[in-house]
Image (tube, rainbow over all chains, first blue to last red; front, side, top):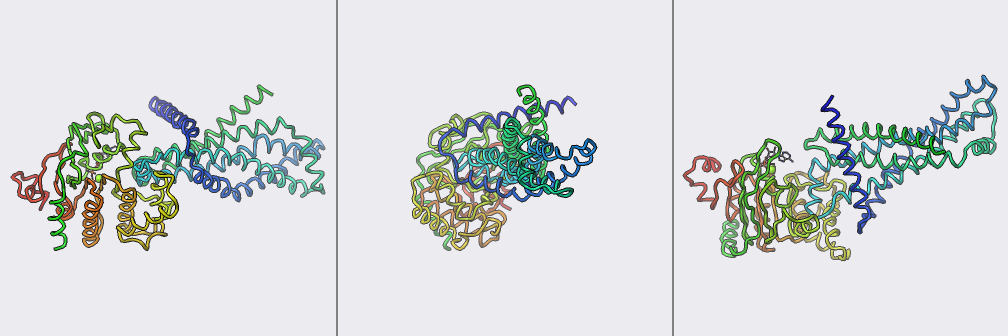
Length: 252
Length: 258
Ligand SMILES: Nc1ncnc2c1ncn2[C@@H]1O[C@H](COP(=O)(O)OP(=O)(O)OP(=O)(O)O)[C@@H](O)[C@H]1O
Ligand SMILES: [Mg+2]
């Protein structure tokens, strides 16, 4: 137990230093713009199909599942408002972030891990190229910006799924559905939910890069890096979410 | 025949004046594993030095210390008369721009084509090169290793020997004054190995470069080395020409040449 705690606190300290370096390097000149755009494409665009499917199903299922409870009170007309609130405030950000942790953090962890193991990162360093700036800064920044966009996209697709779900039992037209939805959502619901997604994205990128960069030698460590990147990133998403919810509760 | 001639020519041209690389009493351990224990080495300008030694004796560690990839525990390492163990990262990078490093397994960037691999370093070093100059440099570097046709291939499409040669051309493209070869011929057939040896000699003459060559391949050591060092227990245990070491009184040294 003691060594476990020791390892954890060591790792958190090391991760913090690794993350602080991001803020040091990002303001230095000669930003790797091309690599950044490439990472946005890989992290953002390539995740669209997965996010589309999962968020559509989330919206649909959530609507269907809340019908029995709501109809007990004769409150079926509240379903769009309720579903959209829980989607936007909580479910879409967290589920999308978890999906991204599975796809992006593991991808980055495996990619950088294998670069580390096959000495490609060392090769960059001896060529006087800063591997942190080229590989890490670009990936963390891309993840920080792409995850919020993916979440907003997931909100929309989720609402669309909800529309289909509502229509399975009755006939609500699209305009009426969305007017009900937007009536129930306030600006204050969207802002904190969006702010936390930047943190989700940052930590997904950071943990993926950290695990990859610290892979030890040997091919099996590539798998380990990818695996522990997913586990730690998912865990960090729940922790950030808990903190974010408490803060929002206090402030608003 | 050709090889013999090359050796003779080279020995005449080499000028043994200026010391380019110098290790002074370098210590390095990983936990309880003491790898370098007071390692001393000096290499003169234009010289090809070969390092022999058993697997795990610290050869790769020594040249990684030389480029600052591994931080030494104690001791000094001079390159062009500056102690690189005391430099900050920006100063160190200036020194690194003059060093080519061939990794044991090539270490090609596998997300990039051969061409992009070669252009990568070049573009980062000198931002004001135009597209034409870059293309020319790439073509020349690939021609040197005889692999012009591989220019648009991905590293995963190359054989082990090709990877090594591309790794070599990537090290050469910046026209470094110092080249460090980590087992340039390991895992290659004899014919390709001799081609690489020829290439190492050609590079030495063409660019007047200084090289450190780590190898297990005795033929490679004999052909390319002006001086041969044998590492044992973290220090240079023996040193001399190929012939003198081969006929050494020390049984352990002689055992390398059987
Ligand atoms: N990054 C590292 N962390 C911990 N130990 C290391 C590291 N690099 C090397 N070592 C240890 O240092 C010793 C020397 O390794 P090195 O790679 O220099 O051997 P070598 O002489 O190059 O062998 P080979 O001929 O097999 O390449 C080995 O015992 C190795 O386990
Ligand atoms: Mg080695």
